[in-house]
Length: 386
Ligand code: SF4
Image (cartoon, rainbow, N blue to C red):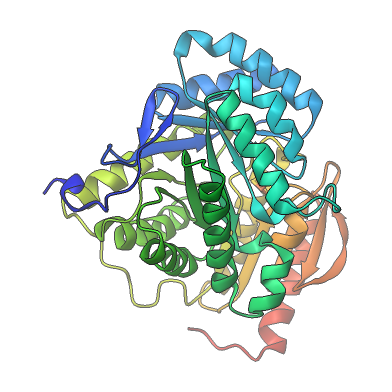
């Protein structure tokens, strides 16, 4: 059963040598997990992700030093002819510096409010569209449920999916009004249910806009793959989705797995090989961990995520969420919704219970603190096994 037969007709968006949407095969992407300024390590990441068959490879850029490193990475990987994309954080103006080096730029609407507050979001989007036209590149409007535009968050309250969808619709319309149509949209969260709901809602209103699908911070295999599989099976099987990223917490050398797993999932869906979802999946312990990127503050984070999973095995039947994040950029916000949150700094780990900070601990001592906290969360919530 050819998957393309059931795909929704979206606009074609060219990203370097790859077409996204417009009936093209679903493109598979991944992201370099290393510090961008570590040029040697990032070049290795790009090469191994490319060798795994990536259509687009993303690199995070937060500063001018990152831009200089990106230029070097591009120069050293030019022989691959890879399509590179950049993930911008708050400093949207860096788009003008990175655009000559890449094929696509992703911006997060929730991050356009921090710099130059006197300037309207519309003017900032116009700047980005202008840069994209000038350098012949595509854009991605990358909305994350955990870092949604503050005005939308205030308007929608607990309906965070509603806030995410409205933000995505608003930016798609803004770009259209500016006469810029070479963009894709993503609506991501670590909860696959919100990913499915958000993309369904957006797609029902804007079926013409190509969608980039992904469950962000899905965590380690196999759980991270299962969460992603559920979201993709539901969305892609109904024709929604033009490009994907499987976001997994993996050692740097295994990052190519994001591509091989993504292709295997697409192949299963295309051939009708659906896995049944256990009725109680997601009802017990849920460990969210980020896939790591250039912002990761200490590689010990990856081992810590594994240790937390192993240590908390005894509580697998309790409905508790633990979030382990690699940096201070997204770590503090992305852990707010978890019962227990850990966000990693260069020398230590910040431990939270819900939105409240419990303390700052060394990488060696934090695991014991998490265990104590986990026991306490289970006891104080009066939880019983699922
Ligand atoms: S939490 Fe930080 S290190 Fe992890 S993927 Fe997000 S930005 Fe990168």
